[in-house]
Length: 70
Image 1 (spheres, rainbow, N blue to C red):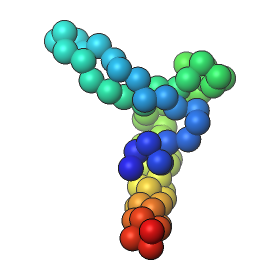
Image 2: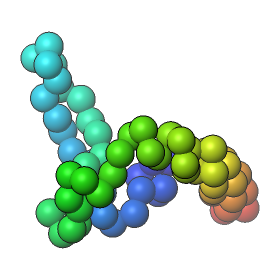
Image 3: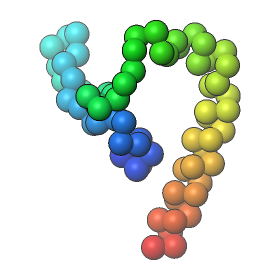
Image 4: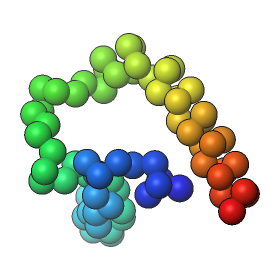
């Protein structure tokens, strides 16, 4: 479902974890023009998180309806 949700700016990437294991995460690809100062977790939480969660829930509902419709 995340593959369908994430847009072409993100690539599913194998990442090294601090304990030596590996995991998977979505990372901005090299085509994205993102600077370190372009995003702040604190600002996102304060200004955008609630609306983002609502949009994600609506997207998931539409996605599941499309999947059921075949």
